[in-house]
Image (tube, rainbow, N blue to C red; front, top):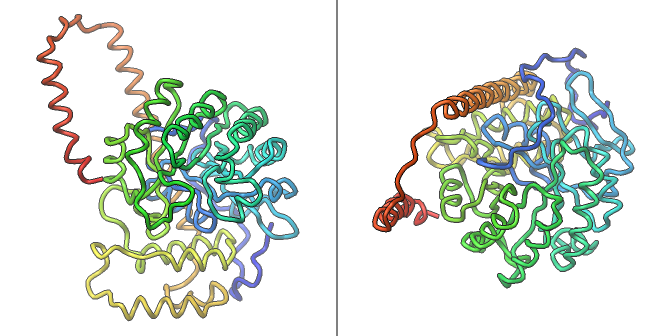
Length: 422
C-alpha cells in the first residue's frame, strides 16, 4: 500500500474492504461511440476526478498522459482496503486506478519510441480497457522529447508507435490516438489517412486546434467534417471523437450534428465542474462537488498536492449556485484551501473529511445502474432483430426525386437550429 505523505493527522479508518455494487463486467472492446467523455488532463483527470465524472454520466474517461519511461520501471500494488491499484516508484505513485472504472478507462501514453510505448502499454494493460497515444500536447515538456504534438511532424514514427502498441496489448484492450489539426487541411487529411491505414486504432480523437493555437482561441470545429468523411470512407467502424470547447451534453449534440463525429470529449468544462456530463443542471460546487471530491480523494489516498489543485478549479455556474451564495463565501474557501497543508486543513470548512467510502459506493451504484440499463437495451435490440427477421417489412417503391428533396429539407430544417448554436 502506498501511504499518503503527511496528508492528515486523523486516525486511519478501520482496515476493512468496502463492498461495492458495481457488477463484474466481462472483457469487451470499448464503445467509443454515442458518448460524452472526459479528456486526458495532466493534473485534472486523476483518479478522484475520473470516478466522479463517471458518477455524473461520463461515458468514458481518459487518464492523464504518463511518459513511457515513468511507468515502465514501476511496481504494481493493490490497496486491499480501498481497491486502489497504484503503479509506484520509490513510494511515489505514478499512476493510480480503481477496478470499478476499468470498463471505461483509457490510459494515455506519452512516447516517441515504439519499443518503449509497447512496454508501457503492456505494463498497465491488465487494469485498463484502452491505450491512447498522445499526439496533441503542445507543451515543451512533451514536445522536446519528440512526444505529443511533435509526432504530428513525424507521421511514420507515429504510425510505428501505434502498431507497436497494438501488438503489445491483448485484443480486448482497444488502441486509440489523439491528434491536433495541422495548419493545412490537406496535410491533416494526409496524416489521418496514414493513421487509419495502420488498422491499429479503433478511435481517433481530434483536438480542433492547431499546435500553435491558444486555448482562448475558438476551436475550429467545422474542420472536423472532412476528417469524419475520410474516416468513414477508409474504415466505417472507426470512431471519431471531437475535442475543443464543448461544455456539456447539449453542446455535444450540436457538435455531432455539425460534424458527423461519433462522440465529444470535454476538458476545461469538466475541470471546473465534473457534473457537466449529466443531463440537466450541473451540481453546486460548494455544497456537493467540493465535499464529495475531498472525501473521496482522502479515502483513496490521493496526494494532497493534486487534490488541492483539483479542488481549486471546481466552481458552480451562476444558474445553479444556491440563493445567497456570496463572493465572500467563495473567497473564504479559497483562503482556507490556499493555507491548507493537508486534508485536515479543509475538514472543518466542508463539514468533515470522512465519508469517502460512501462517495465511492455512490459511484459504484451509478455504474451498476448504467450496466443494467445497457444490458436491457441490448436485450431489446436482440429481440427486435429477431422479430424483424420473422416479419420483414415489405419493400417500398423507390422515391421520386421530389420526395428525396423533401426529406432532405426536413432533416436540414430540424438540425439547423442546433448548428447555429455551436
